[in-house]
Picture 1 (cartoon, helix red, strand yellow):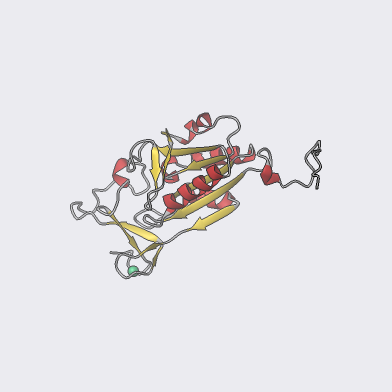
Picture 2 (cartoon, protein in one colour):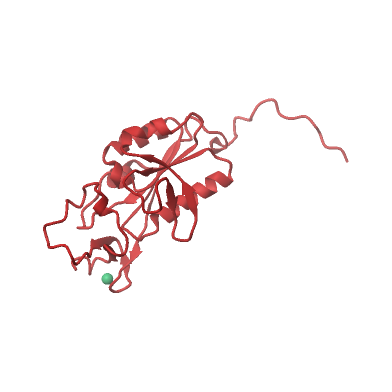
Length: 212
Ligand SMILES: [Zn+2]
């Protein structure tokens, strides 16, 4: 049995747009939630899948976040991806070479409101932009730019953690450092290194227990 060797000379017009990067393929995907919700885990999972599919991927983390070591994003389950580091949203486009199909941004809250315009520009240019970050401050306020990014995204995944007191779904986290008298901590929305911490400084809390 013979197989025809001819190949189509052009891609049919009905070919799915996802098959080729370019204008129209861009989108914004947001992974938001409190600390300990698995946001970086989900970001790393999507990066891993895109690379398996042969996509050209750029991962960016903020220069303030060195928890996993500078220049890498790690999931709790052990997946690690190398990342480029940026100190501000304005630095992001310069880290994205032509042909990039997916840009993943971790700890997006550190990049501030300027990230909305940058992410929109990249998505308009045909790039899939996956943004993970805190949608709430440790004192329970919306944490820009995540709320604004959620508003303009094609896809939003709002993750919850597990309340450290009762085990309910936790949409909040609180700062639990006993060595800090009230009023001595910098503004909860300020991008300072003291706000990057783990279980020694923060706990996930449900609505009932977010007050202490
Ligand atoms: Zn609770």
